[in-house]
Amino acid sequence: MNALTILGVGVFFIGGLGILIAAFRTNIWWGLGCLLLAPLSLLFLVLHWDAAKNPFLLQLAGLALLLLGSSDG
Image (cartoon, rainbow, N blue to C red; front, side, top):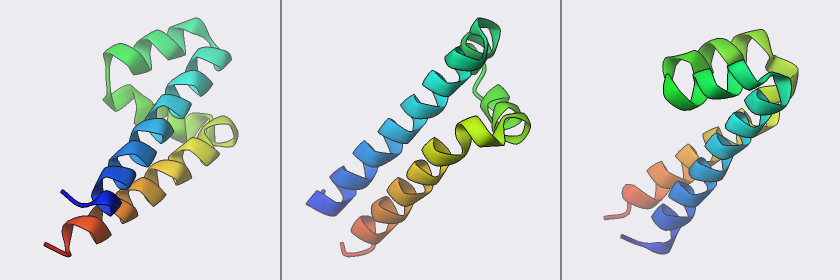
């Protein structure tokens, strides 16, 4: 596993944490739902785009780094 792959996983994880924090800031029920039911995070993303936009884009950047790092192998 090279450094770019590890960085991509870290950035992706931080973005996911950001979505979870945004969900808890919106409402405790959104936060608990996103924590316990992963598909609910997609619904949160659609319904609360303004709050979840930046963490989602951070996750996309992490995914891009992850894919770039894993293709070197």
